[in-house]
Amino acid sequence: MDYVIRMSGVWKSYKHFQLQGIDLKLSPGEVMGLVGVNGAGKSTIIRILLGLIQPDSGQVSVLEYPLPEKQIEAKRQIGFASEDMRLYKGKTLAWHMDFIKSVFPYWDATYAQHLLKKFDLRADQEVKGFSHGQRVKAALLLLLARRPAILILDEPTTGLDSVARSEVIDELAEVLRDENRSVLFSSHNTHDIEQICDSITFIHQGQLLASQDIGSYLDAWRHIRCQGEISPDAICLPDLAEVRQNGSLLSLKVNHFKDEHLDILRAQGLEIAGVNPMNLEEIFIATVKANITQGAA
Amino acid sequence: MTLLNSSVKELVMKDCQLYQQMIALYVIGGILGLAIFSMPHSYGFYMGCVLLMTVMIASGFHMIMLTVINEKKEQTLPFVMSLPIRPVDYALAKLMTNLLIFTVPWAALTLGLAFITLFSPIHDGLLPFLLLISFQLVVNHIVVLSFTVITESEGWSIFFMVIVNLFLNPMIMLMAREPVFYEYFDKNEIVWSVEASIILSVQIAIILASLLAAVLRQARRRTFI
Image (cartoon, rainbow over all chains, first blue to last red; front, side, top):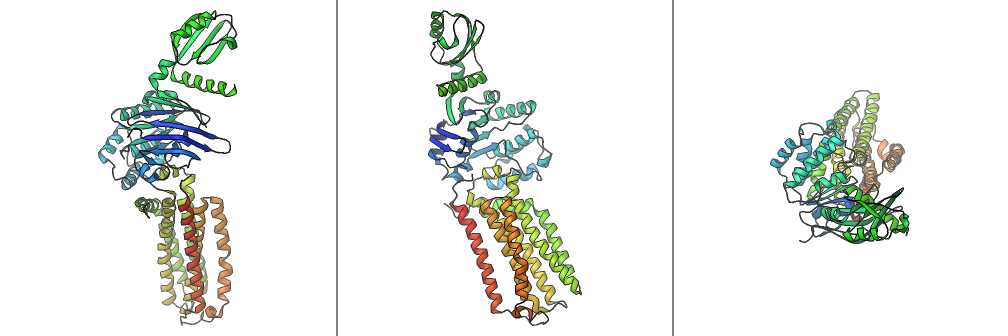
């Protein structure tokens, strides 16, 4: 199997939103982050991947099961958790574990006990007594102990305070390090994504902007600071995503950076003050802004 | 495509476990109604009847709200949707759960009702009338349940509940005016008339049509959302 997830030319229209020709592929063992602002289309993509939404057009398959036709077969092997998912608050975690065990024959009781200790959860505690962080960990335990082939996590850390988020991400990262499991992790928080993912897909206003491994993003993007008397609109530079001016100081964000970029800027009378790598958040924002600028043009 | 997903049974068990305390409370209410019904005074008969009917109607509707509507309101639906089920499996599970939760206590209470009617000073001739009224509560419950499963809406559910129960009193009055029923109210002779069979047939037809509509509607849905 080349890809565990395959979306090809997927369109879905709503009254005020449209998913536009999404092509997405996830290789076996790949941990992909799906990054976008709220309302970008992340949850719609994920719901289509679970067979919960029928796309208007395009092809979708998970583990080679076409969706939504084979949603039962696909969902048997997908572990899903989302920010808006709640457990039954009047019941204990042990009750939930028994329920999941009754539905999924591959429930690994030993691993579940291991995760209980790792996540510092009490099986005999009612869910209504859990903090938000514990609820997220409980949901992760319930899906991880099923040993699914793919994990699909839709903003699982949203709403958590910074300490709880860090705990959840650290523990999830540790669990994922031990296993060769394909993961699609959506978030608007690039910091979370950076810690556990090895590739990232940027999505904005229903469009897929970019999809590649983290190293390629970090290698390709540079923040160039330069000085000179030139209007930002007059700068001519390939793959220029963003320009900011502060007096005679210019701040440029460039994709597919090469040393030739610096020569081009010098040729336009600019003096290079510094070239710095960018973090994923800066790259994401620059990608979105570049897309908006292109759209406006 | 299998006809019945094995996860449906687990979903039914889940809901029964979730609401077992509530079911027990309603059964206690029903038993109290039977106890009042068996009292050797006419006011006991009327009060017991009203309490029994109230418990049955309230328990049925409350369970529909808890099992179908609350799943959305309490945001446990994403958890259920992530299980290996289709929309029709979910609908079947909800129908089966509510049928089980409602009809088992209903059958027990109706048997109690019949037993008390037969072995107390209450005239045995009332029995066909009481059984048909009791069965109408099942009809009403299934109609509301089916429409709730179809619409998945609290507002529509309340609307159908009000409508079907509005028809209950006129139905009782109309039946009580029929000679085939009222002529036996003060007799110990039990007569199951042709009219009683026709009413029962119509009730069964309404039940089957409601359930079929709910299942067929959900079977046509390929996705949950």
